[in-house]
Length: 267
Image (cartoon, rainbow, N blue to C red; front, side, top):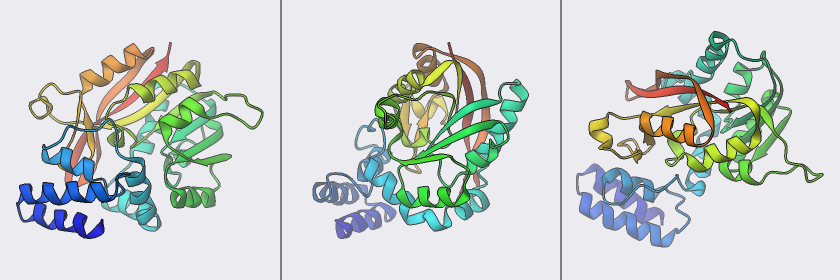
């Protein structure tokens, strides 16, 4: 699989997109769970429709491989500060404090740390087992789990069979791995208490690039969602938008990546 995947990478870099497509599709037949994220690369090349989300195996492998340098890359190299933007937005909206936080895609705990002064009990979830180990070392979460966000929202039960709820759910840098947001929003609606809040960030692209599509895989192999799509999906899922602000999510090759910071309240 690795040989076919690397051949695809080399051909794509050389501009031989037809050859790259053939190599990627061969890699996908050898690795149906798509550890290498081939389906995402094919979508970014425009030769395949975008999947509804990135393959779980790909996301877990990606973050496991970069876990030990995760914060250095994300914060120092990419200028990522969305957790601090969430904390500032909570202050400006004059909401909280919150009793129970569920931090989806918690990473090493950056959002948990940023919100430590306005939350009491914190639960973290991430697909990467190695990332969760690093978050555990920070001792910012009372509970930590390894798993996929939508499945957790839909299925998680306590040992006694009860289904817990939260009054704040965060998903900073999760939507670029999701694509279709409806399953996530439905799950969040089911886990939030009435009046509870959902905070998340998105990446976006100009409408002339999206061309009416609700979401697509961009050139950097991450999902971008249109703002109209996000607004419509939130309303349909039963959320009131408290804020939807344009932000720079991070840098990519020293260029700002545009997106939105959203705070929504469950009706």
